[in-house]
Amino acid sequence: MTTPTAARHIVNFITGNANKLREVKAILQPAIQVESQAVDVPELQGTVEEVTLDKCRRAADIIQGPVLVEDTCLCFNALNGLPGPYIKWFLKSIGHDGLNNLLAAYDDKSAKAVCTFAYSPGPGHEPILFQGITDGKIVPARGPGDFGWDPIFEYEGETYAEMDKVKKNTISHRGRALEKLQAWFANEMTA
Image (cartoon, rainbow, N blue to C red; front, side, top):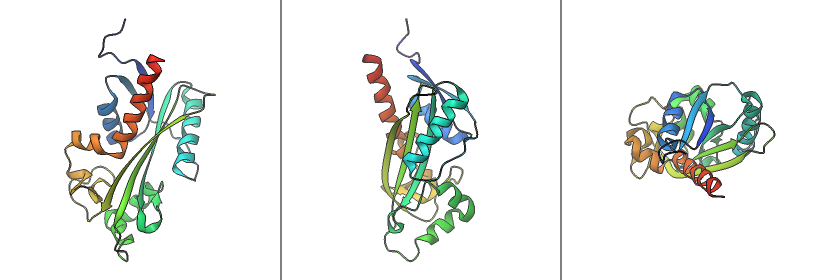
């Protein structure tokens, strides 16, 4: 018999990013035990949903067990959603200043932070998607620069980098997606 604080599910979160792992564990545990595996899964190019579903199927085949994968997008409304799922590569190539410069010619600095998780109980199972979106805007970098594009994404007057971690986990795109995942797992337990 499990206690209320014991994990009811165990998932292998496929990431090599320590900051993402820390956030996911802070949001999901203790209800869902998160193990981490840094597996290099080639990424299909396409929509965030296509990328995440394909990555989840491949990871489940490699791990031979339950997996959770994530794809994060930063979508500039003035650029019709770009850089979108390619934000990691844009950030690596041009940095925070370069991302701001992409919007220099536009009055519209609004953006959407989109996080899409896919869960699969294992090989041969069709993954299930959970998506969270937070609307904000792109601003010159403020706050610690140790986690991706957090310093340039502002929500209600604060960048993600400036926010208390508990607050960020409550309102962020990742937190919103994981809230849906938790609700799905809770429903599965009562079904």
